[in-house]
Length: 507
View (cartoon, rainbow, N blue to C red):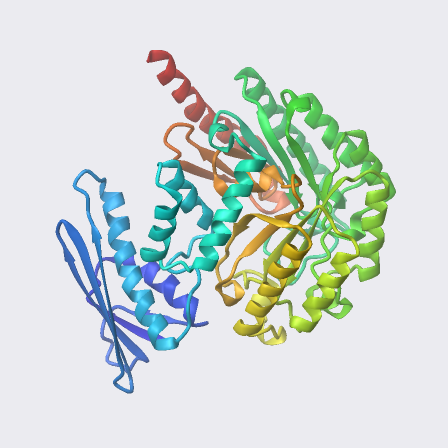
């Protein structure tokens, strides 16, 4: 699909217009200058900017059909240039989405939103004191979000504030993400730091030495500055890929290095690959009072598991779930993926039926996303996936199933190139929500990333400004520079927390 855009010269609009076009078409080329070749459609914009911004878009296709849309939005005088541009961008996006919807007949349920955290927007409006009904109307009128998705957002926010009543008051604490970059094999859809662990014991040993160093140094800084930890999350990769002895030493380091470990609200360990779970590793988790884990089937179709590179059986998933339950794991999450290769409504129905026999405390329903660097994206022709309508049918099936089984939605996020322009939703039984998942999605506090590929998000406790810092993804680069990365993180923490402490003392 080729789209010729006229009337927009500011390059800051180029990416938003591309992202919205990508919601409708798999491969889109946006042209901002006439290159003398025929395009599928032309969209011409007219902008008038004064006390308000008036935007108009006219779409013309090759057959001569014409679609138009207009939108007007106030531009307050006291706003920053950044906020002013955001309002103008909203107006342009509004009319652009409208004419594309009218031309294609496709309704984008998330409207003009292309970011991954829709609920942050509703949180912000409500925190600013906007009445709920007015906030919902704003989401519908300005952002073109449908009633269905607004209702989902509100459900999630209500659940989050029940699970974490002080969600807006946790800026002076932090959460910790610990990345273990090893897996038994790498899944075809995956772009996480995940290296096949077989034959890498030297890399594992070096990596764990660096990780222990990071934990000690960051823990010391937190203790010295009287900053507590809200949640700790061991992710990856698959954290249970390492040996039971290595796990034991890692959790011992956590208790020795981190402040007030007994007061941490939640510690989660992803044991997502059933083929990494053993009685010895579960004993280690019990020893350190960790009972929240993930065991991820993704699908209960054996052919699918083989196709995506997961070298465990469906029976093994079920066996390891019962073993974990028997050995005291009281809060188990399971991940399912909608739209895996070769799967449709029939296969996903089977997966839900199998899930019903286990009833984990929480369930995350992902919609398959073609991530740029994944094996699946590089070889799209090899992996046949469901069309948009069937993917939507599967999502509706998941929504009905979770509701019928008393699961409540409590967080969501979206991804680029996600099938059907849908979302990933975390559901849980009442009072079984993952606090870490809420913290990472709503960005209400700093999350310090330790380990390979771990991303830190430093959030200013006063302004909310986000500073990102990522450790390298491959073990060798991490091993070569973990001291430097640790020192850089501590420098950012000093600037962030000490600055705000000093301001408070001066006042």
